Image (cartoon, rainbow, N blue to C red; front, side, top):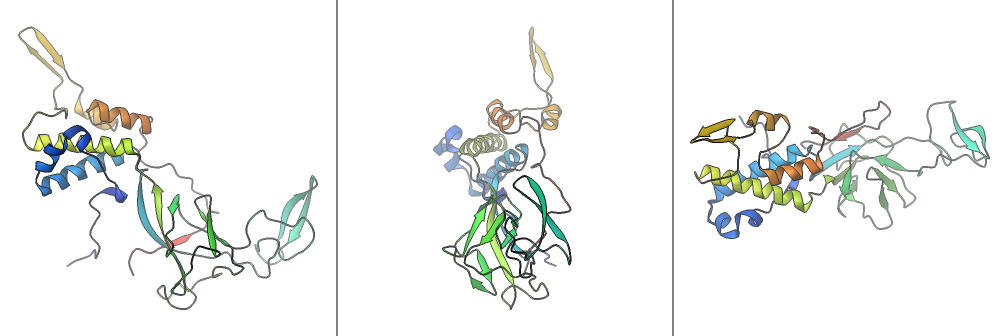
Length: 273
């Protein structure tokens, strides 16, 4: 029985790597397509994980929940009878949603929704309401890599209908690229690691470390770093690659740092439709 309708990506979040810098085009081009693919996966996934899983652009589709504010030209609606504090000329004041007194302002756009980010880019066809694409020019903008702001005088659906698929009435969907672009130096480090892995598979001399602590032969002693120690520290044993990893992830973080708050808006992520 097939469970997943979409195959897993071969490389994490649109990663690319450059193996020609260390391998040379001749070596890499002479590899079989299968070995090239396996080596690329090893290099990309290893460097991606070792740098805290922070880099790479993944496509994400969400159906945001709009912020409801009835007749609210000056502030956000919280609940019936709730006053919103603000400062005017150094004094604390209160205003209620819809009050037009001077100084009643939230310092926020009238209509915006929060997108789980960081949002790298939204394509021109990425925003749709009721199945129709909403062009960017003159209709919306992106603030702070998270906030999708409506600027054409209309607003996003206050409470879209999650009981139906996107395309029906009162539905709203955004498709965008989330994450950080892969720096070129990381792509080259991943390519270098892929080359060494391919050499190891072919039985050639490579720079990947082996499980050797020390060798004594004919009066010569050779010591090598324990592989287990390298793995615990998120390193590979290839010096030039590990230098890059340590530069981007000096504290050995396993994933991107996040802040969790019960006040953070919630967006429903579409995984299959």
